[in-house]
Image (cartoon, rainbow, N blue to C red; front, side, top):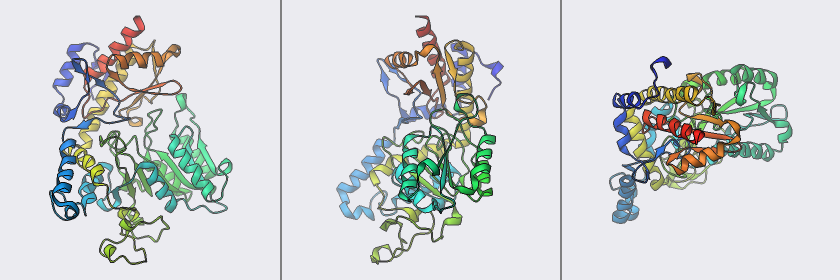
Length: 425
């Protein structure tokens, strides 16, 4: 990333940066929604990624094989269905910094979270608490609270919520360490996000795992806003598990199949789990025996046969990530989001407050914005009406995420110019 002093708020500079972008061609691999006679300025990849142009054909290929071969498509056709989930394994492992056997694409995020907690939240009378961040995504909080109740404990006592100790609810590593040190003896599970959905704060996963393990706690992560956004090293982090969705930065469509990581040290562990037949050892699965023998690795947590029509879009998207490379995408993201932050701080400081941390290592693509004067919703609706798409989170946060696969420096500049124009109207 160039130094901030080299940033400029003029169109010529933004266009020059876009022209010099080595990843610029990837924008052409996505379908950008129209706004009138032009394209939307789409800054909402943190909520729903755009559709890759290859997705339609990927799904049609499976529909064609279904039409031609029916049940035989499990073994014939362009991409036989029986091992279909294995087709996304290597690229998924590459993206999250894992060994292939540590990852599996299955279910949805919240289902996977419950499956992981069934195995890794093993409360005892002395150690039954779960540590999450205050203001966690509601589905996570609901899941955690329900698991605590399911095991016969009271969330009022067994749910510990980390409160932000810095401006805008940001959590310092020191605060996390202090709480784990204080309550570690009764914490069974530390469950934190890779990127906090509302503030956009990114967390140091490896350090959190170290803090948790030092006190004998299990550590897991919700990576909904981190996967495809930040380089991840799940294996090296040492976390026990992680879960994510694929419809945000992974561009796999609404309600897309989610993903799961289980560290290799648990690959053959006799952990309790909610079992299903597709998690059974694949060499003996079709003998239909009564005793469950789990497949080694993350595959052993599967319940049902893979949803082929849901996996096809993920396969198409992961191919793009493989070709672009997460390291190159991160480098562009740092420059792109850095440029947007600089523009806001230098052109909109009287209008917009950035909630997301300013330190590059503590954020991904997303900037969470609070509009001064309590007019954020009015600004959001104005931008939407003019083809500039972010998203709104009550009570007062607008999120925008310049996504390196398809966003440009000009998108950032046009967003800022539109906000300035609204403020002066």
